[in-house]
Amino acid sequence: MHNIFLLFFFSTSYTCFENLSNELLYEIFEYLDACDIYESFSNLNNRLQSLITSSSLLLRITLCLKSSSLFENRCQHVIIPNSHRIRFLHFHDESLINTFFDHYIIDSSFHRLESIGLHDIKAEKLLTILIYLKSLPRLFSLNITIMDKSSYDLGNIYSLIFSLSSLKRNEVGTFGNKLPRIISHLTNNKFSMIEYMVIHNFFTLNQLNSLLHYTPQLRHLFCHGVIESDKKFKKNLSMKLLHLKYIGFEEVYVSFDEFKVFIKEISSQLQIFRIGTYDYKNYLDGNRWEQLIKKYMPQLKKFYFRFTQDIEDDRKTNLIDSTDGFINRFNSPFWSERKWFRELKVFCEKMIFSIFPYKKQWTDLREHINTGTNSKQNSIEDNYISNREKSDHGIIQLTIEFHGDSDLDWRFIRRLIPTIKAIQFTHLNIENESISINMLLNILRLLPHLESLKLLFMPKRLFEYLSIEHTRNHLSVPITNKMTKVKLGQVTEEQEIEFFINLFPQIEHLKVHCLLNTDVPLLMKVILTNRKTRIPNLCHLCFDFCMADENLVRTLAKIIDSETVNDNYTIQRSGNKISVHWKL
Ligand SMILES: *[C@@H]1O[C@H](CO)[C@@H](O)[C@H](O)[C@H]1NC(C)=O
Ligand SMILES: *[C@@H]1O[C@H](CO)[C@@H](O)[C@H](O)[C@H]1NC(C)=O
Ligand SMILES: *[C@@H]1O[C@H](CO)[C@@H](O)[C@H](O)[C@H]1NC(C)=O
Ligand SMILES: *[C@@H]1O[C@H](CO)[C@@H](O)[C@H](O)[C@H]1NC(C)=O
Ligand SMILES: *[C@@H]1O[C@H](CO)[C@@H](O)[C@H](O)[C@H]1NC(C)=O
Image (cartoon, rainbow, N blue to C red):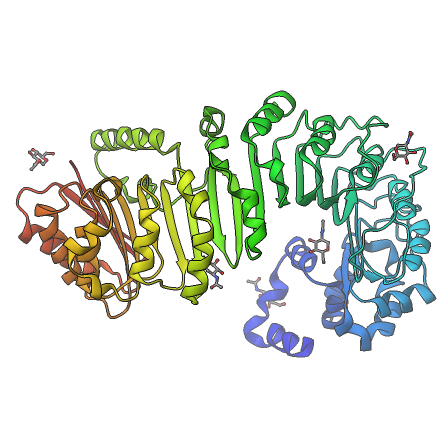
């Protein structure tokens, strides 16, 4: 492969490569693996030879199973002779690690080495290697994946890692055995300089506590999971982490009270906090979170919270069915002032409640406003938007992901009815499979506060329902009157649009995703006719159509001009999206 690469580079049309300055060539080499550089460029000519052997070119080397046939050769001719120039050395295979360290050691001759990766290594081997790494003066980053079925003690491993005096980044993963490892008490007498620590493992709070005691410089901490131990968490070492800005936990399985004792010790500078938990209902108390954040996380800017509940098992659903609706306990101004949104997602027999910082939603109007129009108009529109955004603070989104088996899907929804009814959802997203129109109407009936609806697909058996009286009787008027934003996926027929126009007379914002065979001009006509009579508030319309081009924009503009008189509107295309914006 490298030879072909070479042929291209040095055939006549590519002689320009050699016209590049040394600085540029160095920069290109920085991106290449040193073994590839040596195999491709050595002994070609004096200039290249002196470039690739120059002491100012530092080398990066990644060794994986693919390279095993060349491995001996690479060790002898690239790694060992250049040990003083290697900056980055990563191994991705146990047998390569064993072969290398059976013959060589990484000692002070690798004095420029900054990053080491040892993936798929046995714990015992790792302990012996770590001892040698102490002699490296510039080792900033150490990335380890331990694959070991036998039992070992992470305490010893972390003791050695913390004794590496220049280490700033450390990532340790343990795979091959799901059980958490014993961490004996660490006995370092030195503090580590680590700033960035990632742990793919489960620890108890006491174990984490004893680790964090040695990392006073820590800025970023990710730990996969926290589990309960028979001993309650007791703060017995000082672990004031005055630089810690990021904490992430994927799975927390300890009581909120215990977790709180731990987290408040280390969160005084925290800016980003991610936490996921399963089935521990006492995390679902907005007031307690609010107190904790206000008192102990004064710098917090982004909060990502995820609570997952399995609803497969009938007995478990009761956990969540508190009559007041747990999301309502996250209803105080504290949450809306920070623009932290709430979502309940139901999918695959699971229910996930999450809180996350503001992110752009399809219901945001900003993307539909033409920034090129005159500035007075823009400021009016900006006011309109910011008024809307104020009212958006109360967004509570329900997302339901269906997977095709409607009986099954409906059984899960039914089980959640008390929860769903207790929460004032304002946004509904229906994802993946198309559901029957009956099921959609049944869901809508549970949600009298909805302002927006997003359907990824058109409902099935929609046409059986075309009698609008029938449909409206099925829903109550207040439900249909609140809905102002509607996004419809995979629309092909004008009747589909008409159905939703009839259903929601207050529509202001309509987004239509069309398929290849959709007659977009026809849809435009239908919408314009209805705008005069049924949906007078419509002010934003967007077609998402893969064949959108300037011709279509002109066609649609002509239709608007001929169907309406004195209509002030702008039309613009951005990629596949054509938006029309009427000035009210
Ligand atoms: C590029 O290098 C070749 C010889 O390596 C030389 O003949 C040619 O004039 C150089 N071109 C430029 C633009 O410097
Ligand atoms: C550590 O290695 C893993 C696996 O190669 C990689 O996904 C991860 O990004 C690395 N971490 C760091 C901090 O470089
Ligand atoms: C801290 O607590 C842990 C677990 O309870 C215990 O093993 C350790 O010895 C204690 N350390 C000190 C310094 O008291
Ligand atoms: C369902 O849709 C969501 C959002 O579009 C997507 O992320 C997810 O992968 C889909 N799942 C399946 C099973 O199609
Ligand atoms: C449209 O805008 C122009 C100027 O911006 C104004 O003079 C005119 O009255 C508007 N027409 C309607 C129907 O509002």
